[in-house]
Image (cartoon, rainbow, N blue to C red; front, top):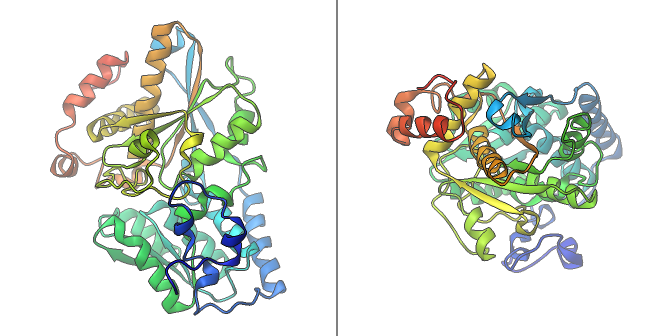
Length: 395
């Protein structure tokens, strides 16, 4: 494939933006010479879509959890988490995987018997393995060797195969190579996440959030806080908020080592960073699906703060949450503290991305955390004192 050759869809107008966005579309599925350029047989295609839609119909919406924080509630500030851990595959990425499969099917990129390949740090691969099994398709997940054993086991449980690379930045080329070798399809969540979901509604996560908030005392959130891995969730929420004309700000909580905060400040899509140590969010490069113009504020969060907040929130809820939820919680507390200082009232809504049971031998293990992230006990004490959480047990 020639380096600067674009497919017909790209020449017609790539929906991305940014100075290097068009070059990111060079390896679209239609450019893979190993993939036959014919549409999937209608009978199989219709059955595949029907199976995904039936699976969706069997699933209830995820819960909205009110956080009991009197220090803020007494000042008229309410905090909520939408619990995405209750999806069949246990994380927010279940929504993305469903959308990516439907998008690929309706574009004619996935055919009966074709191998589906994804570059993923874990949760997206778990969810895509689930949908691949639903459709009877082989699935290969390309991921860093550091991915948690629990996520690897889940991918294999759903019939997927794991291909490991040493560095996070190597997943892209490895996934493309495997798709080329197998004549399959590289799903490429980092490019297509922002466009695979219908941001106007159709029960996307943003529409669900606002519907569930309708009977709360501050029904339109002042802030919605999310992390960014692909950037697809922030893009969906940001577009929906604007489309519905809500007075809601969108804040992205970005872990240490991620490039997104620097990109948001500068607009330079050529920037790189070491990469995040908080699994599932933060990236070493600017991903095509992260749309900076939709984000009102970035909050950079140190690793020890993410871990401290993860543990404090786990205590508050009476069940463990994952580290990316801790990152979100730090940003929520900062925003709530600022609102209280200004005498503002309102609500702040974020996501419980996945359950902490996936991280028992890693982020919830003191020895593992000390060896890889350092001592987080000081951050835990600071968090409890700074945000009026002294009633929680210290660790």
